[in-house]
Amino acid sequence: MPIATTNPATGAVLRSYDPMSQEQVDAAIERTDLAFRELRRTTVAQRGRWLGAAADLLDAERDETARLMTTEMGKTYAAARAEVTKCAAACRFYAAHAERMLADEPADARAVKATRAFVRYQPIGPVLAVMPWNFPLWQVVRFAAPALMAGNTGLLKHASNVPQTALYLEDLFRRAGFPEGAFTTLLVGSDAVERVLGDPRVRAATLTGSERAGRSIAQIAGRELKKTVLELGGSDPFVVMPSADLDAAAEAATTARCQNNGQSCIAAKRFIVHADVYDAFAERFVANMAALTVGDPMDPATDVGPLASEGGRDEVHAQVRDAVERDATVLCGGEVPDGDGWFYPPTVVADLTPQMRMWSEEVFGPVAGLYRVSSYDEAIEVANGTAFGLGSNAWTTDPDEQERFATDLDAGNVFVNGMTTSFPELPFGGVKNSGYGRELSALGMREFCNTKTVWVGRGEEGAGAGVGAHSE
Ligand code: NAP
Image 1 (spheres, rainbow, N blue to C red):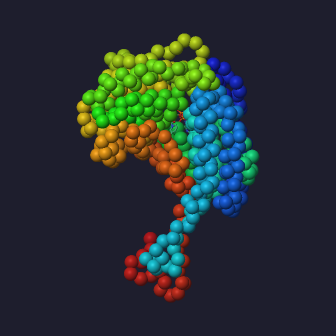
Image 2: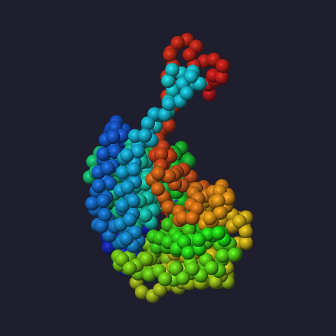
Image 3: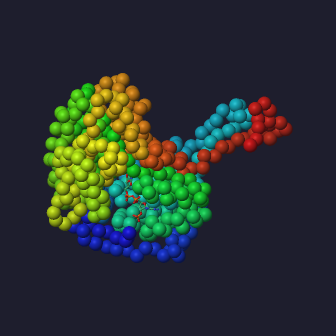
């Protein structure tokens, strides 16, 4: 894949880059390793000041950065501005809370026959971050903010279609005050990942992307015995039960499916509706979807911009065509519009069967699958009946059902009467083929920490021995 900025609204190639040479990549790894030795000796308070400065830069440069993201991957300008704001808030959150998250955790010293015992969280070293284009700033910041606060350094291999955003991120952390090399962008293709992850100075990797990329990175990391966090695809269920507020559910369903032009891992993709309210919900949902304005992502009147690549749009349309050819019903959308740019209309497809690609595959565009179920149990069966397990939504005002959904949905999160989103305060991640490990919250920060047990005894004869003591 060429490393280039191509405007998805026009198809025009605006800027291309030569990939970095092996020598340049090696030099970058050397710099990040040196930076790690420096960064790990700084205090959390100092790193917090730098991260706070990054937040201020993000706020000050919001419009320019948002325009860049819109140009590189087609999200609406309004959504891009909101993404910058979210990134600044996450930086401030980690700057404010890292001290507490990284504080030593005392243990019961008597129980372990020590005078003092505690857990200390320490950085592990340079971490490779392989990132996708769909939230080109947020995906990186949600890794970088906790990683840098913990004292790790970051090597970013961003998606090849967002090189300017990738370079902006390196520049951002440098200008904020972090040591040279603490956060470095590698302008390389995915073929360079194996060598970077194989370098002994690189201690771990995090990937947000497709299942295919996840399998590849997990395989390399397995061979190299390196920790990974994988945030992969999803085909989130959105279950609507009879007690739900149907207007609110249909409105949330529309936003959940079409936010980011339908290209979000945690977009609701399968709308599973109880037969008692199926027609009433479908009517509202289809009306909302059909009413969305598709067009120039810089225009404030636009709800849905282009998909990020021509290949991505072709894939989405092929999934819809496959369903139609097997007798699914298109309730709105479903046709590729004429003209430049990789636009696709909000689309709702009903009467899906397991033979259709849409039933089991992730659809990365503004296309919703509608499923009719006749009971709670059937809703759970359909909701959990995929290889994915990232997010999930349930709409019900019945407290018992709310509790049951929270337990029964097989996913990394359950949002009841609201659409799935992410917060720095809450862990984020998936189960099954949606990946493993968690980002955000204290858990996200500790994924790339050495959780070190410290045991201090009196050093007298017999200390630490006795009943129950054993060594491995
Ligand atoms: P992708 O093809 O996997 O690309 C993601 C990143 O991985 C890019 O930097 C890409 O580089 C790199 N990559 C691709 N194949 C690789 C390989 N074999 N080895 C190493 N690196 C590789 O994903 P995408 O299709 O662009 O992004 C959409 C996918 O990401 C969807 O499945 C979506 O659900 C998922 N996603 C998940 C989350 C989450 O938090 N769980 C969030 C956002 C997106 P190049 O660009 O150079 O190919």
